Amino acid sequence: MKRHSPWMAPLAALSLAGCITPVDYGDVRHADYVADARCAPKAGEQIASEALPLFFVTSRLPDCRTPAITLTRHRGNALRYGRFAEPREMHAKEKKRPGTPVAFENESDWWRALEEETDRRHGRILLYVHGYRETFDTTSKDAAQIARMTGFDGPVIQYSWPSQGEVLKYVVDETNMYHDVRHFGSFLRTLADRPWVKEIVIVSHSLGARLVIPAVAAADRLSRRAARETNISNIVLASPDIDRETFERDIRDDVLAPERIERGRHMTIYTSLRDKALAASRALHGYPRLGSPYCFDPFKAADLKAKGVPERCYPAAIPGLTVIDTTDVSRGSTGHSNFLRSAPVCRDFVDVVADKQTRPERAATHLPHVFRLLPDPATPKERDDILCKRIPDAEAP
Image 1 (cartoon, rainbow, N blue to C red):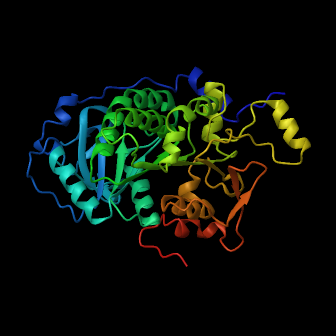
Image 2: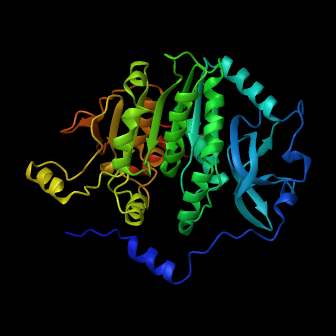
Image 3: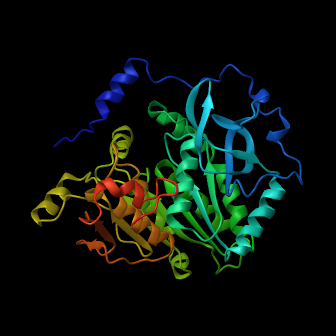
């Protein structure tokens, strides 16, 4: 019984045709991108913080040569800190393109501003880590949507690593993600060790989950907090591009270890069998991804069919873990971003971020830790963008 991903043949053909190209350094010396003083602000320099309400940390190489700072797809030489606002249309050579208003901030000033904002908002912080095929503009749009959709009562930080923003750069993205493990791990440990941070909600998408899981484990081991304290309490993995069996084997020994669950930590996974991006990842890696309930074992699939339940396979039940199957309400051409595109999933996600661990809209399955989201006749697909607040200033009914 062979079941091939519909993306496998096109990927192989494109690779053989030479369409998968190596990373291009570019026509500009990287040192010239950051030569302007705006790329290395001094302590005490003021920024328009009211116009730039969201926080970011990035390992991308910035381009400070033009009036509007941009973040490139190249690796930077250091972590940089700053503020940003919702992307908007900007004019470039008579063409409109999305652009994100940003300003860099001195690291010490950034931490001080984050502390002040956190103190005003009950000590809660939401940290968003994006996935594959993203630019700084697309991740900024998603982070702004998450802030707007959840109404999160605290600072929202996006961590942006140098994803290439191209379909055929998956391996480059994977390489850059692993290159960034130390950067992100160091940042998360610093954030978690701040005494004024009472709770960190981590939301990761796709490949970003592979940054988050080891970083949380390392933060737990190296924490300066008391042995029985943790402020990384709520972890959301949306369409996680992680080997499912590796996750299942390792997670209970570190991130979801019993002592962490006793202190209130929990994890929610959003998965979909209609996720074409993860189907392609499975074809490339050879094994199912955590964000897709694909049954690698055909005998298990046959057993499920014989019992009259959907042929969908999930990670084993682990205390603190909840799996939400979004297959039946999947949206978009790839089904890879349901938590930002499908109204039933958006509503569930909003409640998860608010730390509500049960919802009446979830349909039970034969597994106690797995729930399905089903279509809601009262919310047709045409209302998804409004209900998920993908449209700025749009009011949901």
